Image (tube, rainbow, N blue to C red):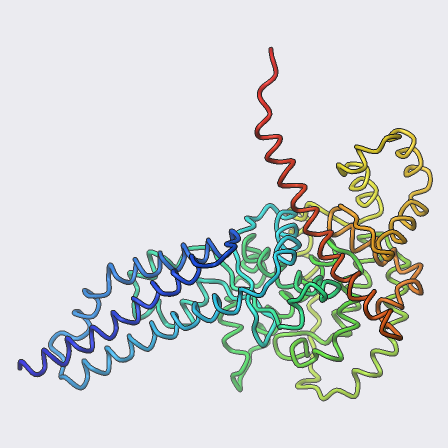
Length: 454
């Protein structure tokens, strides 16, 4: 009997040791030179997990093993330890793979969330082998923590936090032209936060659908749910940042088709782009950009046809999609229309400080196209622009009406052009950082202004 007690006691301690590994992860975060709010919130989440597990673990282990034979009790404790280990290993991986993410990328994604009135600190970016978003609640459910530690899950499972997987090629500052693709993942965060996924096909849980993707039998209702979620993410991203999202999707699909490929979870790229074209033309009122994308699409389509497909099956979900897009309009504060671009420039702090502001305002009102063309020339010559980052990307492409000017950056022909291209891509990241710093500075200054005399 004593031998059994010693064996069980030893197994229980091994389970506790897995929980205590959270302390080292928290220590690693605290040791970072710069702790952005995102990693700080992850630290708090890991600490909350550790405390909630510690609080209930002994009672749970005692209840699970009491009166059971040694072999069965040992097996249960081993299962508990492995489940906790998987969760802690995941957290450790996220923390260790998040340190190389540049702050500028966070600033861009924060701006996207802010445009939907969503907390900017509810997610963490980390390098992975896929592009995806996993909600914290789903992490716990996929780890079976809900079944094995129900009290722990009740205490912690309702916390809203998201793990955003990003492939390494999209992380560097020189990859700034492809950052709009990452906004697609943030659009999924928006849909989670706004409970959009519960408002169509409500009988289908999106986690259940995602879980079933590898299964031999995959119900059509699951595929509909996932297809609509992908179309929604595409269109919400397009509304905020414009045609640059569809353009980058076109450019990178051939290289990253193994990540973006059509499957049970993703519609075909052609179907996705058709909807993006229409959104650019109708919602954003940018026919030139839509025509450019259509023109670029034809040669790309032929290239894609040589890529092996996992499935040829596709679904028409347009009736449901149209309905849910009406709902989405309620929480999308920004549409990157020509009018929005003009207002963003007129309201920007640097424009307000121009010496001849009134004259420049009239110039913008009368000839916005020429004004934007001058800004584009400044940008591609290496002059920073402190603007709303979504407008910044628009100015870089300028409705694709001067695309030839971008070719030395997009397709450099010699070492000099390659160096210039690298500098301009990093400059875009710098501009995003400058805008974020300016915004925070102005917010702090405004908060510190003493009240005026009555």
